Amino acid sequence: MRLGAASIAYTFTEPTIFFELAYKTAVRARARGLRNLFVTNGYISERVVRTLAPVLDAANIDLKSLREDVYRRIARAGLQPVLDAIRLYHALGVWVEVTTLVIPDVNDSDTELRQIATFVRSLGPDVPWHVSQFHPAYKMRAHPSTPVETLRRARAIGLDAGLRYVYEGNVPGEDGEHTECPACRAPVIERFGSSIRANHLRDGACPACGTTVAGLDMRGRYQPA
Image 1 (cartoon, one colour):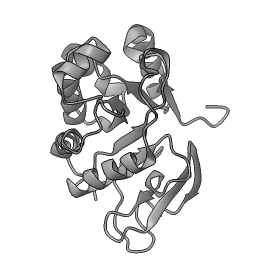
Image 2 (spheres, one colour; image 1 turned 45 degrees about the horizontal axis):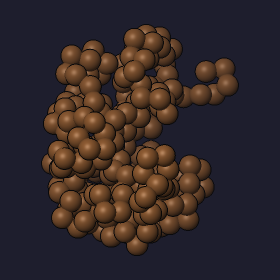
Image 3 (cartoon, one colour; image 1 turned 30 degrees about the vertical axis):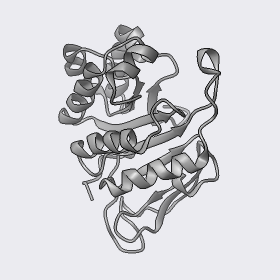
Image 4 (cartoon, helix red, strand yellow; image 1 turned 60 degrees about the vertical axis):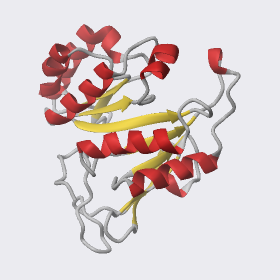
């Protein structure tokens, strides 16, 4: 906090692997006024979610597919626990964002993208959905990088499903990086990769039309738009 940090993100290594440490840290951080954010694969038990939720402010959860065979083949895990965890985090008041790494010939069909978008929309229209570009690595070098056109198509599918905030990830310079007002579509947060270039929000609202933009900042939760 002396250096101006407002939050702690538990990420890169799956935080549930070191849950005991993460939880103890989160409790102490919350007592000092810091926010806690999990970046996670969502594979977690109900008991642990309920233990964690009182000190967790936000969770960005991977949803790799809505097909059990994809989860079993690629993640060596089941799909249902991830869906259950996403729903439970949201129900317990944790700010939830869902990320799908869009992989060519794995989960990039219109049908599957529409199914994922529909699931996210079932949580509420304000839940952000990130559709991120895949780059070949490790055991998945046989798959090409995701074309930018595919991410644009995925974003359009999400918006058509009724989601207000859909983002293209891993593609700096795309308009799909920015947060737009859900009412007038004016850009309210402009990004380039992991950098925020401009934040036009005024007390959590669009300066152009006054519409509240849903989200969680370092001062408090905005009301849903």
